[in-house]
Image 1 (cartoon, helix red, strand yellow):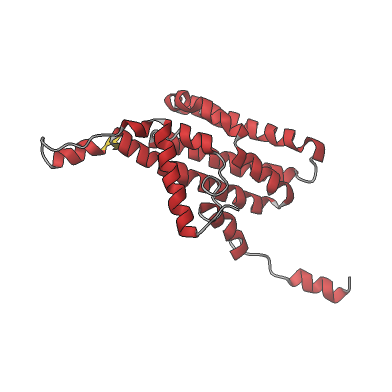
Image 2: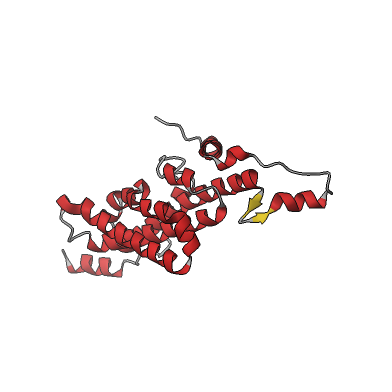
Length: 226
């Protein structure tokens, strides 16, 4: 390499922290490449924990933390992990982070821990988490891997929160435990009442809401399975 070439590369400006390329790591999983509605991953937790908004929000925050930190850890270790044991290492990292989340919930939010402990544990085998580690973090730098994990987790989170919103509103008449139906009925007098739909608190209701979200999103984006 000539001296001029080396100097030119040294003067090359560093990529912006949120360049156009890096922004796609966050924006693409929100709609165009959403892990639930497009890749059809993480469906089990989307159906199981979305009866109410509060546990769904805790689950979303937990997944964001686990995905960001696991992507960062695996990316930092990527050049030292033997290929033949990479899956075991990834599972060990994710399991350690999930255990940390579980213990924090147990210490500071025991009621939520009892409600979500089984499902938080299943983050270890969540296809979204393992998929991003295998497909991205193992081959990319730490900062890019953090953005990728954050974007995929956000894409997962907004879908399960949307499902939980409609399930709790239509099934229980409330949002975050606040009685919306009772408040609305009170505004129109005793003779007016809104009836809840028991189907929404069952897995069937989750399937219906999730199916409608997938239909609306794919209609808007024009995505077609091949």
